[in-house]
Amino acid sequence: MSRLSRAAFRLVESKRLRVVTGVLFAAALAGLIVVNINVSRGYFASHKDAAALTVRFDRLSQSHTNQCSLASVDANGRLHGRLQGSCCSRMDFNHYVQQVVGVRAYAHITEIPADPYDIPVGLARRLAAFNDSIPLRPDDQAVYDRAIRLSDEHGPCCCHCWRWRAFEGMARYLIARREWGAEQVAAIWDLEDGCGGGGKQT
Image (cartoon, rainbow, N blue to C red; front, side, top):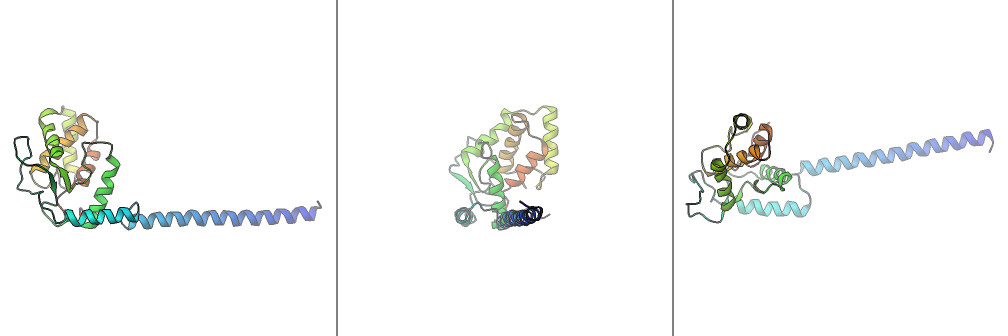
């Protein structure tokens, strides 16, 4: 191959490399855009997921077994079934989706409810019982107290109802048994907030 032919060959290869690189960059950028669009549209994993969450929201937003006036779900009570719906404000769809999808990261921990607006009474009783069965050491109590200050509601709930007791017990379990920090506890309290509304605006 002559010197001129080799130069021409290198020029063609250089142009081909730039074209391939450009195509790969464009594809990567398109992928990022698609991901961002999916996230901005409500964190849906699929259209089927979006439809299922819409149906759940429509049902739970009309349910009212979750009430501030319900102070306790202890074993002596006669309450059965599920605690559903919001206790204070109307449920907000976008916030509900963010909460439910956020909680999915903790699906491996059975003590964390999968849906803040649909909690089995049995699970609520189990969580509330942790208040008596799991004492906090001084350093654990310091973590709990810091979580109180960090959380949006400044506690497990907006009022001292059954939910406060249940999620106080959940925090005791997470701190004492799983060694969670204050930021983690505050974050899960925020995700499990069942008061309704659009959540804290940042």
